[in-house]
Image (cartoon, rainbow, N blue to C red; front, side, top):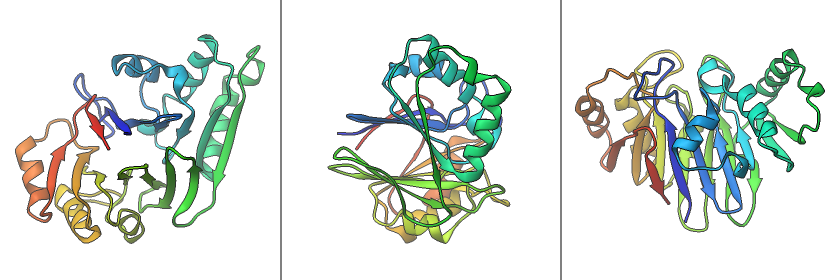
Length: 248
């Protein structure tokens, strides 16, 4: 059974109860961190996850609230004695910018640094990122202000789709078709983002079983946000909370 830990739920402005949106997927041998906000090691410790267990880091897009923690994570794993490689996966532009940030810190001079394998994704739909017995992961480009990807994960039992930041988008809707759980952003209607009502519409058309709203303003009325999604989606709707654990 795969475990999904919601490490943060906020849009770009977090508060003391909501870290910026990122999540961890524990699928046995594969432990996948999706985006890297704030101080990842602290958040992982709060979630009871050993940072050294992470096998893959997927960066959905290069906005500060999704990638600002990358230098801290890579440095802290080194200081904690990591030896095994870490896979970092993202679109070309995202990987290029991530490498440039690390170069500012002269990371190539960090003595005894563990291998980091960068995997660059082309633009497209249903791009296969990870293919193991525990989990298969595909990505499709979303509709955001910068290049961004959503993710679909298939486990031995059950499936998950995470939209990342996107306005309603045909490619993400196709990616989500028939999944058990759709984690969809709900910042509010606007360029590059979706409202809870729009997230519900995507979930309804995609035929998903459960909708989890994430990446929302921290000052929302919870019932209003959930009810907006329920007005367009006939399945179960949940508002994600920080350190929530979902089992699939």
